[in-house]
Length: 431
Ligand SMILES: [Zn+2]
Ligand SMILES: [Zn+2]
Image (cartoon, rainbow, N blue to C red; front, side):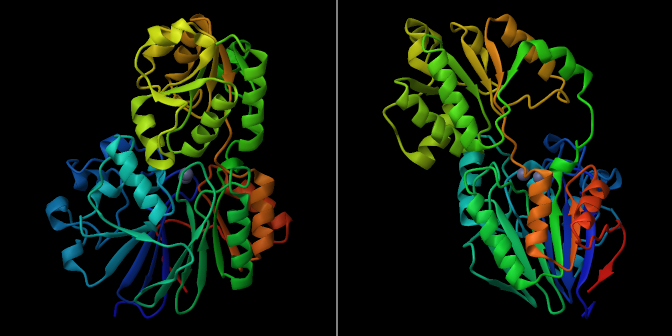
């Protein structure tokens, strides 16, 4: 046995969005959760062919000993998976690249535990090339069914975020109890799931709550100059919830009954697309989808008479008011071939002004004659929701992370009477 006590170590995401990674070890058993692309690292460069030793030396993947294969490491001095007694599993909260983007560096035998819904959805997304192919040992788990791994008991709890299968993860070690929130919101389609696991956490009295703090990142910060400059070209819906967004879209459909609508959404938020299909049917329109999204939609909701894959612009131009056209940024030429109407930018790419594609795209869409409507709803909880949830749970300590401003979040938590822990990199924390 290397260690008799539970030991926690943080490898990423303490003051960034993305790549939040913690290892929890007891003896020769270790859990790592999650294992995404570190902040600022382009996940497209984290392929199985990349030079792993170089990635580690350039801090593009976490320098975790006993995790990577000697074959991939080459001469790198770090301990390989073959040279350790420690058994490691990865617990994955959800399918976003900032949580799984480093998977290509793992040996194919590495067990990756995620909800069955996540695993099934992963394979659909991978088939449509909407996520990379990762050769790992996927293991679907049922929410609320405890799993034993050495001295650990792990329980996944269904949660809500803008992807299917999202879970909060409860980990019991011989000395302590830990809740990892994953990414979450209470303004989506399933706030009940979040409150359900939060209530379960409260009853469980966890020592540590690892809580994402994305929405604290931009708190108190001014609009970018690009956003200021584009302001005149964009109409904002400012819907705070998924339900309000659908109401606002329905109102627009009634306001512009003679116009074609276009929708640029996020493939993993297939639920929003499902409800959009219902709105389309309600307003006597066909939803015409990008072929990859269509395959994803059918895999989850089956074939529907009012939902069809894209064929050609000419069909749409015969009766623009009869359609909603769903587009993806990578394949959006149709936007410039059809009769411009109302364009809904709804968490699709390019996401915002920090993406250099954003400004030229907004201008091009506007210039083509579309009414450019910002129809975004965040996948992340609002600051007050995060603080309220932590207050509901009453953990021993809250670790605010997955945020550019963990100290601002920490202050807000302390103002609510919660104890905050701001860990550091390179430290090994004993149970
Ligand atoms: Zn995230
Ligand atoms: Zn996420």
